[in-house]
Amino acid sequence: MRDTKGDPKSVEAVARSLEAEKVDLIYGLGTSVALRARRATKSVPIVFYAGIDPVAVGLAESLRKPGGRLTGIYTRTMDLTAKRFELLKEMVPRLRRALVFYDPDNLSAQQAVKLARDAARQLKLELVERPVASVEAL
Image 1 (tube, rainbow, N blue to C red):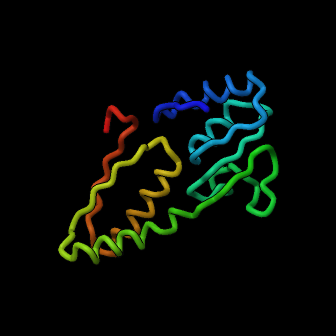
Image 2: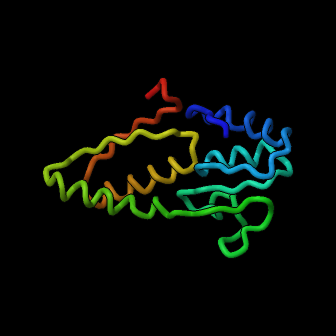
Image 3: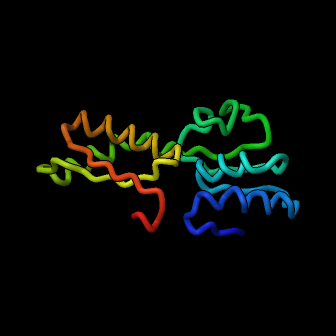
């Protein structure tokens, strides 16, 4: 087990070291981790847990037959973004603005912010976006 302490830039170095150690597989918790591990390695199989469509971001050829050396689970958590905003608006009826922090280098975060923009627009909410690339920036 390796902990990159929230530093996405260290994922590639860790993945390369795991491949050099000849591990049986790499389990990547998160889409951006799996993408970086794939980019950094050549042969080790990668199992991922993704919150966005793995086909759309290039982790798998299709959901039915992932192909290649990557496979995993897709939880479809982003599909709930609009519903989350609806619930927030219901809980706080006078809500006018919502703040979202996200990592601009993270594909999952980029897609989540796009969905948040769409949901906010439909609910007539102002979405205040704050991109942060590190824990320190947050």
